[in-house]
Each structure stands twice: as C-alpha cells, then as structure tokens.
Image (cartoon, rainbow, N blue to C red):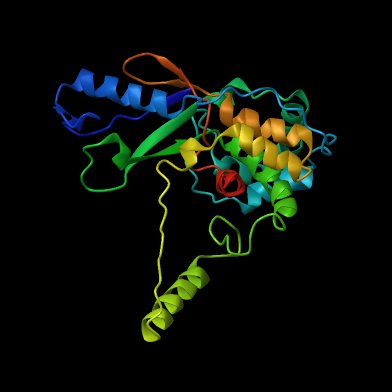
Length: 271
C-alpha cells in the first residue's frame, strides 16, 4: 500500500500543456500519473531460478545491519524507529533474525512491509509538471534491514559483473574519475583539433522504470540464490498503492524504491 503525500501547489500542468487549478482534478491527475508510471508494461512470467536457496540470515548480520544504519532514518508507517532498534539491539536481534528468516523461507512479503509512504520531492523550482517531482519511498525500517542484508550478499557476487567504468551506485566508487577522463578528452581533442562527439543520456524516472523480469534474469545469471531473488522481487513488486484522495488503490508492478539500500545496485545491474 502506498500513500502519496499531497502536492502542495495551486496548479498543475496536464500532459497536453493545459493548466488545472481545481484541487480534486489535481489529485485525480496525480493518481493517474503514478498509476501509469508503476503499471507493468510487459507480461512477467514466473521465472525458474536454477540455484539453490541461500543460507539463513544470521544474527550477526541483523546486528551489523542495525549498527551500520543511520539513527535518524525516518520511520515507516509502522512507526518503528532505528533508534529503538539500536537501543534494544541485544534483546531485539534474536527475534528480528527469526522473523527475517521466516520471510526469506516463506517468500511472502509481510502486509506491514507493503505499506510504503511516498514523499514527492520537487526536482526544480517550477513544480508545474508531475515529472518535476521525485518520489521517495518511506517504508518499514525492518523491511529496509531485510533488503540491506540481502543487498550485501548480492554485492559480493556482482562486482565482477559490473563494468569498471560503472562508478555510480557502487560503494567505494564515485564519478570523479569518470568526469576527469571526459574532461581530459575534451581538452586533448580541442588541443589537437580532433573531432569529438559526446552523447549524454538522461533516464526519465530511472528507478521507477526498472523491469523486474530483467533484474531477476541478471540475478539468476549471477548465481544468486532463488530465495534471495524472490525476496527482493516480492519486496519491490508486491505493493498496492493507495492515494489519500481519491481513495483508490493502484498496483506497483515495476520499479525499485528510491530510499531503499537495494535500489542503486539493482538499477546498476538492470543497465
């Protein structure tokens, strides 16, 4: 379930360029926009994963995930805070580990985890079009710990798969070296009068357009265990979206959540 926060503007621009000022019409436009954005564009057959299940989640993994997380993370709809988990880590960790293993074994996303609150953060000062907003997911802290643990396991097997030039969305890497290489190419080509053509691609709603069929295939090719693939798949593709007004539901059938630790890596693998 996804509750999308109000868009605090007095007017919005329709896709055809016309402007609406009526608040109910603006809410309807927001609902239609995100329903279309998260709708599946292709049929997703049930994948057959060839690798056995991953070992269970160990208590030290749960404890490390809690310790490594920032304390001031905003809580999800269940209002469980990271500070509460950190203060009670010794008594909570065994029960949390057992619960996470149950989710991993049953391959079913808990109902509480399906509730995700989306904050629409403006990308620009214009705020007239819905594409000027970035949807950021605010989900359950325990679900984030779950994906954090699984992401660490996937990362260990994905480093050799990703190109060396893929500097973004990777721990310990950055785009500074890539920018330096491009800058030097421009300087040298200008210095020696060598023709140079530069192409820059900007993916519209990049995280929101990730297709999970493709991601699952990549993870299977990386020999990621089937229960891990299904758990990550379910955590991203099993949500039901609910707008505050009007009171309608929408299914989330594609994309990865902005704000979840697994999303940057899964997006890089999808590329």
